[in-house]
Length: 384
Image (cartoon, rainbow, N blue to C red; front, side):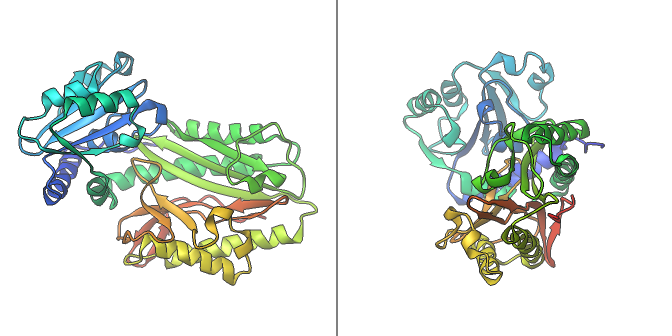
């Protein structure tokens, strides 16, 4: 499987032009993004400059007034095996033990309001250093500005998202082939992970979930040595990563045998519900409207009681945006006001569970077009 070409300088310049306009509208003088290798999510830093932290933390700093861009890294192990990262065309590279002090040194004295993304994953000592070094600067959450830029994907981004979707399909196809009575959940998980790696995945942004039998009603269960049995459900959720972008897929199977009728009804309803969601989602909907549609379709199919506890009572969740983060805007939950736009890529992942019996989920990466949703993942979806 051939990976796409690396992102062009023109693509990164496009992102900065759009970000500059958003920052100006919000009266923000500069922008910083933070990432940490401990969260396995390159996220905003990778989106802005293509850097993926492996052993420590990193920050991207952008001064719109001068056009200068900086990459700050706090662990030499991050670059000791990647010397090319220090010879960057677009950004000035800084290896520093104190990210906060270095940001303060690099920022022009005229900066009064700094937009920051990624602070939720920032260790306390880094945040403390940043705020102490920038005591005279107002630090503002700039997630809305970055989201406005990266929600709609470019052609170059779509190439990497399609590649990650193909890697996800490789994992799902291997899962379907391996999900047989007599094999363990760990064995099935290993087959899926190996298939994705062999196809070109750099890694996985979330631990794989493989569960069987009653454990499939646990929403997100890590694989164990439990052996699959005839007639029961088996479910997988796998998040791949390549080129700083992400893929996400869920598949489930009902193994041949004596299956409870309610579980077979759930499986058939789930396929029909997801088909409708992909068909109907479109620009102009709010993100919350997509989640409401899931709740409505589940109720129409007599499956409302099988929605997960957190999805009942008007709290339905049915997916999320995906790109340089595994979970990014828009989040598809009831009440979300974010308007869906043509060119967004989301996951649509309805899930249904019968406590003590089993459950299933189907998840696909979906491009929002003027005519509805277009699946990017294509592994077989039938549960039986």
